[in-house]
Amino acid sequence: MFKALADPTRRHLLDRLFERDGRTLTELESELEMTRFGVMKHLRVLESAGLVVTRRAGREKLHYLNPVPIRLIHDRWIAKYAEHHVAALADLKHELEETA
Amino acid sequence: MSTMTTNQATQVYSIFIKATPEQVWDAITKPEFTERYFYGARIELRGGRRYSSMGGLDWDEEVLETDPPRRLVHRWVSAWDPEMASEEPSRVTWEIEPQEGGTTKLTVVHDELEAAPKTAAGVAGGWSYVLSGLKTLLETGTPLEG
Image 1 (cartoon, chains in turn purple, brown):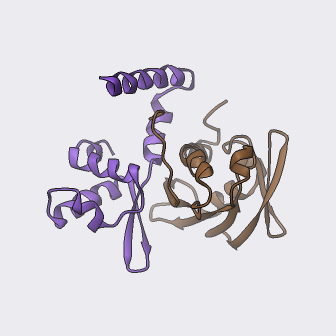
Image 2: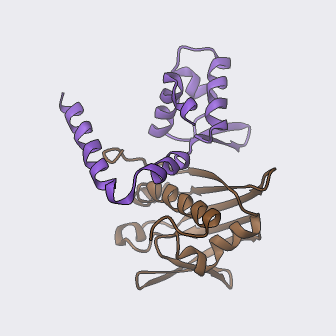
Image 3: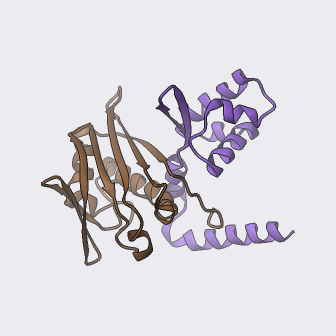
């Protein structure tokens, strides 16, 4: 999973799916300057890491962001008592970066 | 993450669990299991309905399809929140698929959320928490918390 996340194109694909889930390859490809084959390859890496799940809808294959593996990492290393500190720091970062 | 929201009419969650399909089925349909990972809710199937009991609140939803230990489809109402509860019922599909090597793939599809935007936003983080807790319970015998 960390290898899957260690690539900017793959993180970008996850960001697109976070904004709106259930996209086709064609939709995802249209926002990237990359060949269809290249995008497919990245999606396959994300799928085998469990970060993307695909479902068939008629003739189309739709891609969904699966946040569960990220949650498992969270549950493993962020102890329950520390969660609100982590959330506060994350909020602070978002706020500072938005106003910057 | 906490400053972002997600609002999707179809949400898909998937997890691999080192357990048999039968164990996964029991864990999602029997109250003695669900209360240990599903926000304390006691959930059971009875007479074509899915009954939930949580924090002194009781409600039930229609079961649309049941094929143990492979598939369960039911209506979803977020009864614990008045605003979410007043929205149209959505639909939850549990798909349980055995994999090679003694693991089981569990996929939860929460859809028909078009007329339930508050529910869609409300459950978005919850499913990851629930499935993570379910995996921990089945693999270790103890819940994530407590």
